[in-house]
Amino acid sequence: MTFDLVIIGGGMVGTSLACALQGSGLKIALVESQMPLAPSSFPENAQDVDMRVSALNRASEGFLKSTGAWSRINEARLSPYDKMRIWDGVGTGHIQFDALELGESYLGHIVENRVTANALMTQLQQASNIQLFAPDTVKEIEKIDDANNRYLVHLENGQMLMTSLIVAADGARSFVRSWAEFSMREWDYQHHGLVCTVQTQLPHETCAWQRFTENGVLAFLPLPNRNLCSIVWSCPEELAESLLAMEEEQFNHELAKAFEGKLGAVISSGPRAAIPLRQRHAKSYVKEGVVLVGDAAHTIHPLAGQGVNLGLMDAYVLADEIKQGLSRGLPPYDEQLLARFERRRMPENLKMMAAMESFKRLFSVQSPMLRWVRNWGMTKLNKLSFAKQHIAQQAMGIERNIR
Image (cartoon, rainbow, N blue to C red; front, side, top):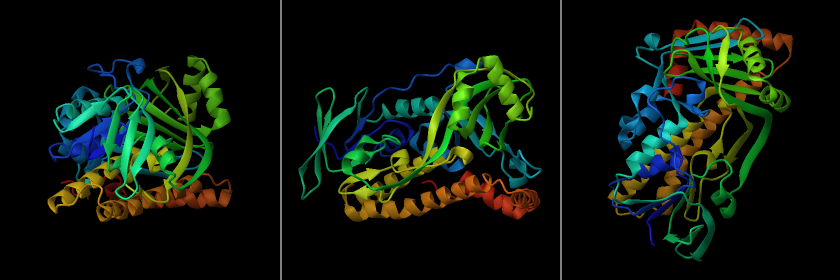
C-alpha cells in the first residue's frame, strides 16, 4: 500500500497531526501499538483516573478545536484551572497567578492523557483519507530508493506501507529515531517523576499547586472532582523507590507532609508509577524524508507541564507547513517545506527547554545566600504585574494564532 505520509505513533501528537490533515487530500497511514481506553463519565475516586495527565494550555486547546477533537472530550473529564500557586519549600518565596488578573476565565485545562487520546482517535476514525493500523507495530523500515527517499515500512502483521515521508511520533525511546540515526543531546536528571491520583481532605479550588522541595518539585493538579488531584513528584531515584514501596497509608502521610498540608490530609491514593527523567533534544528534526515530532524530538523536565504542549505545537506547525505547501503544489516531503518546519519549531522548543533547565538548577542550589536571593526574587516578581502577565501569556500560549 502506498501513502503520501506514514505517521509512526498514535499518541496525542501523532494522532493530532493526522487529524489536522483530514480533508487535505493526502493519503495517510497511522501506526499505533495500542488503542486508548474510553474513560467513564466522571471520576468518582482516585482509582478512576489515568495516572498520566497533561496541563493543556490555550494554544493546545485551540489546535485541538481546529482538528474537531476538543468537542469530543467529555466535559465531565475536563478540569479548567484558574489559579496557580508556586512556593519555595525551603524559604518564603512565592508566586501566584490568577486568571482574573489576566482578564481570562481560566489558565488552562488538566486532562487525562487517555481522555485526549480517545477524543483524537474518535475524530481520526471519521476521516476518509486516514487509514489506521492498530494495534500494530513497526518491525522494520527499508529504504528502497535513495534518490527519492522512498521507504518501505514493514509491520508486525505482515503488511507493508510505502511512502516518501515518515513522521516519528513514537515517543522518547523512538524506534524510528534510532533507525534513522538522528544525533541527540541528552542527560539524566538523576530524578524520577512519581505520578498518581490522590483524594484530599480539602477541595483543590481549581488551582494548580507546586512546591519546590529540597529533593525536587511536587505538583498537585486539579481534576474534575474537587477533592481529586493528580500529583507529579520529581525526586531522586532512591526516594522514588522508597515511596513506591510504601503502604498506602504511609505514602499518603509522607505526601501530605511534603506538601505542607495545603489541602489537608491525603485520604486515599491510586496506583503509583515512577518515570526516569531525562532531557533530550535532537540536533535536527528532519533527515532524508524522516521527521521527528513530540517526545521523539525532545523531552523536557515536567516542572512546568509544557512537554505535551510543545509536542502538539510540533504537530500543528508541521500540518500547517504541509497544507501551505500543498496550496503551492509542493509534495509533503519537499525539503524546503520540512526545513521551514524545523526553523519554526526548534528555537521555540530550545527556548522552553532552556527556561526549564534554568528553573531546575535555580531550585537545586544549596547555598544559603543563593536561597535568600531566590526567595527575594520570587517575592519581588509576585508584585510585578506586568512581568507576571508576560510569563503567564507565554505559558498559556494565548499569543499564538491557531489557524
